[in-house]
Length: 259
Image (cartoon, rainbow, N blue to C red):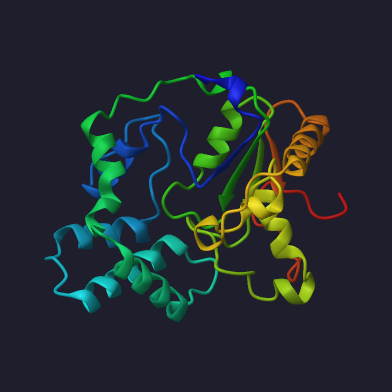
C-alpha cells in the first residue's frame, strides 16, 4: 500500500488481516479471556492448550529436551488433517538447533508486536490493487478462517483452501496424491507462487544462487497477465482443493465436481 508500483502480485499464506488485532486475540485465548464481539477467530483448542502448558513449564534441560519440544510444537502447527512425519521433523529441528545462534529469537516478532499492538493500520486492505491469491489450510490451527477475511477485504482476491494442510507447508504430497496425480505437488508450488517462475518457489536457502535472467522477467509478466485476465466474480471467489479419493469438498459451500 505504501509503494504499490513495486508490487506486481501478492500471495498470502497462513496469515491474518492487517489491523485485525491477531496478537491480542491470541493472548486473550491463551489467558482465558473472552473475545470481544467482532474479534478474529481464535486458535484451535489444541493449539491453545499446548501453549498454555508450554508457558507454565520450566525451561527444557538440554539439547534433547529442547528438540523434543520443538518437534511437539511443529506437530501442533502441522494440524490434524495430514499424518505427521516425526522422523522428518526431528531431522529438521536438529538442523535448526545446530545452526541457530539464539533459539529465543523465534519469538522476536511476537515481542515486537506486543511492544506496539496498535501499530497496524486498520481498514486499509481494500486499497490493495495487485492481483492477490490467499491460501489457507483446511486444518489451520493458529489463524482459522483468517484467510477468508483477507480475501473478502481485498478487491478481486481469490481464496484457496488446501485440504488437510495446517499452519505449515507439508513436507511432500498428501497421502495418495502422487498415485492420483504425479504432477500435483508441482502445481501446488505454482499455486503458492503464481507470479514467479517455478524455480523461485523452491527453498532458496538450500539452493545455489543463480542471477536473474531476462526470461525470468518475461515469465513473471506472463503469469501476472494471465492472472489479471482470468474472469472474476464480484466479491469473494473460493477455490476448493478437493479430496478426490472420497469425492468430497473440504469446505462447506464448495460446489461438487461437475456443477
